[in-house]
Amino acid sequence: MARPISFLDLTPIERGSTSAEALRNSTALAQLAERLGYHRIWYAEHHNTTGLASSAPEILIAHIGAHTEQIRLGSGGVMLPNHAPLMVAERFKVLEALYPGRIDLGLGRAPGTDQITSYALRRRQGISEEDDFLDRFQELVLLETRAFPAGHPFQNVRAMPADVPLPPIWLLGSSDYSARLAAQIGAGFSFAAHFSDLDPAIPMRLYRESFKPSARMQKPQAILAMAVICADSDADADRFASAADLHFVRRAKGEYLPLASPEEAAAYPYTAIDRERIAHNRRRLIVGGPKAVHERLSAAIAATQADELMITTMVHDHEARKRSYALLAEMFGLQPAT
Image 1 (cartoon, rainbow, N blue to C red):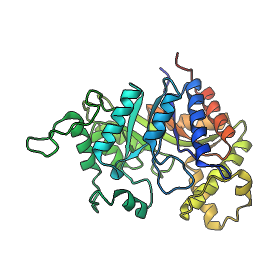
Image 2 (image 1 turned 60 degrees about the vertical axis):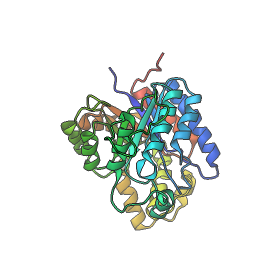
Image 3 (image 1 turned 180 degrees about the vertical axis):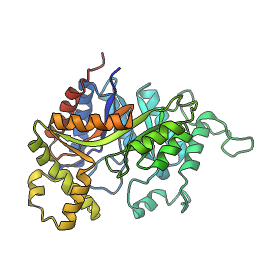
Image 4 (image 1 turned 90 degrees about the horizontal axis):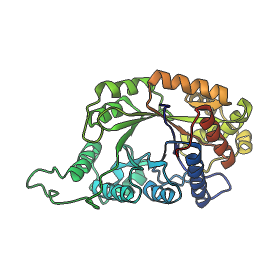
């Protein structure tokens, strides 16, 4: 059986465009992905970031579900520190009821934003200085299994709709800690190689070796997420990637702006430090024509033994983004499900 290929849609806003247009582009991209044979699409949660339109992945999943027929949809991810576990459970059970067998619940440990915005999101929740992700996750599972001990105040709380199961759970991470945690709790694991400097083979191996089967997942399932920009030629891909270069430079300076065009990127006055940052990021960004991209992706899959490859592509031009995904579908021989 061929390895599934999926993608992570960060809903980038192009310079000169709007958030509404970015969301419409995501809808069109999902419909294209379904026609091309992609396995699943995940949507991220980002706040106070003017260059990305997806601040509420649950709403976007519901919308995309209504405009597609069978492709899996999920969060990549819901940032659990921002939310009450009961709210997360109920939202995703509703999604599962609407689109049975198509929904994934991907959970992240980070807030998906800056410290002040994180405080604004959580200030009514009794904020702790400690990492409470595991406590929140356990509460989420106990709400689903109704396994709170006798006398616990949540013993009779039911996540509704009660007759709908919680979708499959995936833990997102960029470190070996996340890999061990996903293995410990018996969840799927998606490694964020698109922004991590860690050799992805390390956490992927740790996850498999440490995995403990759970009621949710009987065997390890590992997704490798990678940033890819593919075009008809190496030169075209490199030109499109210049927008991602500038985006990375600006993020390093705390500037979360709409995605620049290649022309704006070419005119930007890069400093020596900027160029060092670009070179650093290019080591984890796969850029090129079909042959070059296929070689690097195949090598990454072989090294990590990933069960699934998940692609994210950040380019200014929506048509170029669609072309990148079409070329990837062709190189991996994807076939639309019947």
